[in-house]
Image 1: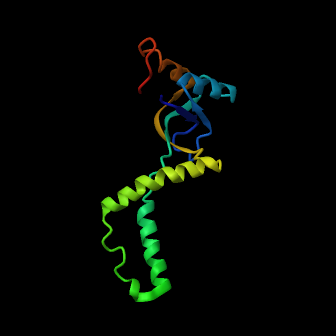
Image 2: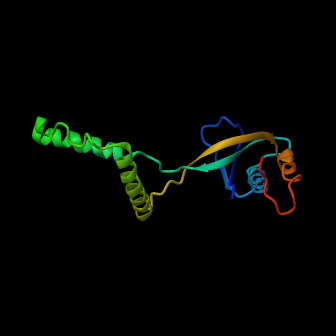
Length: 140
């Protein structure tokens, strides 16, 4: 299900309106904040932050650095045979663990990216959903 956010200007660094489940909810929130029907409102789709980081590369690099610090040149060449498929396998194992740990400590990402799709008045925003099929979802 698509979620929406709203703000006064589409180039705002932080959008304080939302997350909302519908454009009508965005309009309702903006109205509650004192926006008038002829004031401009920027609308955007919410894109959740996805933890997609190459943990494995950093871990292997750090292991090599630590080994060199500990034993010096004797560790040269260790893990040189690690290839991208090995790192991908490690990432597939580590990423779920990181996500679960973040959940356990109450630090799952609360932030998200926004992909602006229109700027219009509150009145025009209400019209955006008038053309959608009955029971259908808006896909602007």
